[in-house]
Image (cartoon, rainbow, N blue to C red):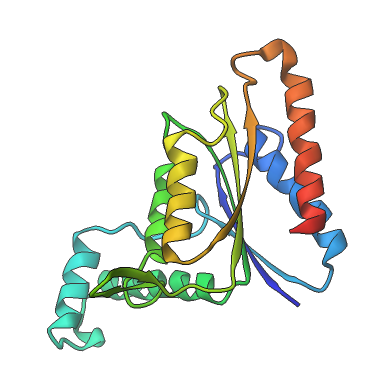
Length: 206
């Protein structure tokens, strides 16, 4: 049995979002092929994902100087504990699926906040004399992203997601793009259908 972590990084539903629809198509196929797997869905727009802010930074700084965790204020404790939980959730997963739309050539800010929780020195990578070294081994990931135009993986967002995952040691990163519908609305049904077929196939083999 494998543990699959699904990161839904879009605030809309499958009826409103192409990336969420592709994610759902993938999951339906995946769960048929892997009925015993444990699937956890993290919705970064519904679940609490702390952003790195003054409270987190000052709290981390205090802990490094020997301050007891219980001496931090309640908000700092909540944010740090949740940040750590999300890091551990990722580490305890065998597979990860991330689904988002390309917004202004970048990932949604809520997804960036989650990515910060998995790019953690001492947990998912370490600094050495030869440079940073990954600590994350044996995982694989799938990145689903809807793009209004055609980028074929050259956009900043998909390169960022893949780059971070590779940096921390996730070598196998599959990518599924739903592309071109905004440029060619007359081909919307064809383009979406092709992407959904690919999502279903990935669900059988991921």
